[in-house]
Image 1 (cartoon, rainbow, N blue to C red):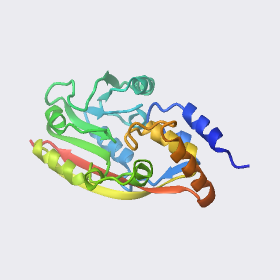
Image 2 (tube, rainbow, N blue to C red):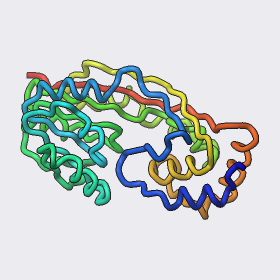
Image 3 (cartoon, rainbow, N blue to C red):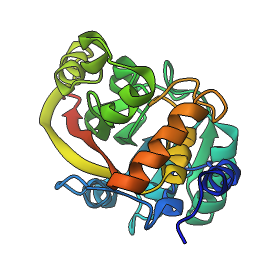
Length: 253
C-alpha cells in the first residue's frame, strides 16, 4: 500500500538534518552529479598542499573522505550541530576544527594557506580568501548556481523576479574573485537533473537546505505540501534543475 501523507510528513519532520550527509534521501530523491568530480579534484590538490583550509566544512563529510590531506589541514564551521558532527569525523584525521562564521572574516593571519577549498558555501568572502592565501596559493570551490531547484522554490513561493533567478551566477563569482586580486584559472557550470519521489523527501530537503524556501515550516505550507503529495502520487516524481559551478582561482606571485 502507498504510504499516506501524514505518515510521510511525520517521518520527515523527525529526521535529523545536521551535517551534509543526504543519505536519508536514498531511494526517495536523486540528484545528478557534476561531471568534474569535486571530491576527486579536492583530493588531488590536498595531496600536494602543505597547509590547507576547508571553509564551511558542514559536517566534515567531504573533507573526511579525502585520502591524503595536506600536511596541516584546518576546517571552519559555524553551525553548532555541524561542528559536533565535523569534530567526530575530522579530529581523528588530525584536522584542526575552528568554530567561526566565515561569511565575512576568516580568523587566520595573512598568507597562511597554500590551498583553500569550499563546497557549496552559503557566501564567499573573496577578499578574505585572497588575504589568507599565500602567493601562488589556490582556491577551489564547487558552488550552487543560479535558480538551482528553482521549480521547487517557485512551487511554494510563486514566480520569482529575474534578479532573484540570476543570483549566484558564476560570472559574478569570477568578477568578485578578480576584484579581490585573484586570477581565475577555471570556471564551469552545469545544469543537472533532480527528482523527488515522495513528499517526505521534499520536506527533508527543505528543512536541510533552508535557502530554497526561506522560512519553510510544515505547518506554514501544509496545504501546498498536501497538493504536491497528491501530484507525486498520481503523476510521478517532482523534477527540477539543479545548477552547480566550479571555480578555481590563484593568488598571483
